[in-house]
Amino acid sequence: MSSSTPFPKRPKWPLVTAGVVVLVVAALLGGWWLGRDQGGDPPENTTTPPSPTDTTAADGQVDGCLGGPDRTPEMVLAAQEQADVASDEEGVAFAASLMRWFWQEPWAEPTDAQRTAIVAEHADSSIPELFESAADSVDADTSRWVSTSGALWYVESSTADELVVSLALLPVIDGELATDSRIQATLTLTRSDGVWRWSAFEAQMRDYEDMESIGTAFTSGCG
Image (cartoon, rainbow, N blue to C red; front, side, top):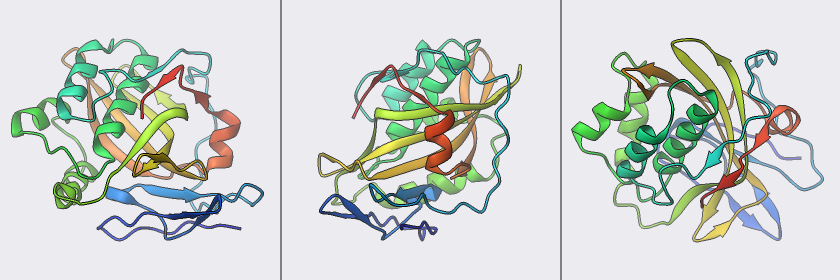
């Protein structure tokens, strides 16, 4: 049975051997690796997630490659321009684009202007903390990112002002998809000046068994 524990600030990645994730565990830039043996129990989660609500766009079609296949700030800005701020599904697609860019080594650091465009004006402290951690991996000599191919999404809540979405993404290490591991995170997006902006981040609100039960697969994916 595998388990999950927080990563230190500098990322460490799981060792995948013979189809089993050996848990060198969990949060890259504040997020979480969730390792799973094929026949094992899901990792424990000490956070009690909210119950599913009527706001979930469970039947929606969501593009996991919004903005294109690149993992750059320019891709995120293209996705931001393409995503309809009135559509929860397109907000989910924008959240996936954010994670495809943000959760990688080496990291593609944004300019100050790009960061201002991506992040909400009143974002909570989780966002600058993530950016500070990510800056340490700009010159990383590893090659790691996440894929939305085979990934899941779930809308936690939606209001006129913001969208909260949970994602379960697949890690890619040196070009190989690590199918026995998952990156999970919950992002809060703000509807601001006609576009989506990133305003909060939470690691592992839900365990993967939960996401398998209530999550929806992306219609298409990158990675």
